Length: 135
Image (cartoon, rainbow, N blue to C red; front, side, top):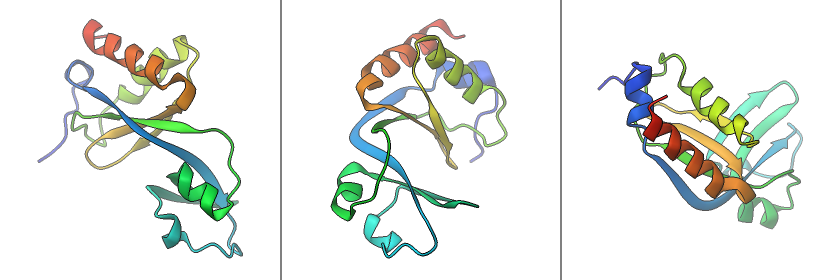
């Protein structure tokens, strides 16, 4: 099943869902004694500076991993194509107008927006308005 590419359809049917769990982004260098598997990362990304991990805050705290900021995940439940154009921009712009940072992770089926935990409910309301306006 291929994902949706039409921007109007994506925005109109994205059904944002706010998860309750808190996540953090952290970076592990190649010499880190922490086993990545024990962190049970939601996602990882190799960068020149180290391995970025997105993990539950509780796992980072238990492992003593430093991080900045605590985030909650909003999942756009529409099956978006990885070749869709404009969805990330529309979501990011709507959140930016509200002064909310957006860290977007595109997965195979859905886009996931990590927003500051303190503004998660505001971010969800903003995205629900976007769906309602069909912008």
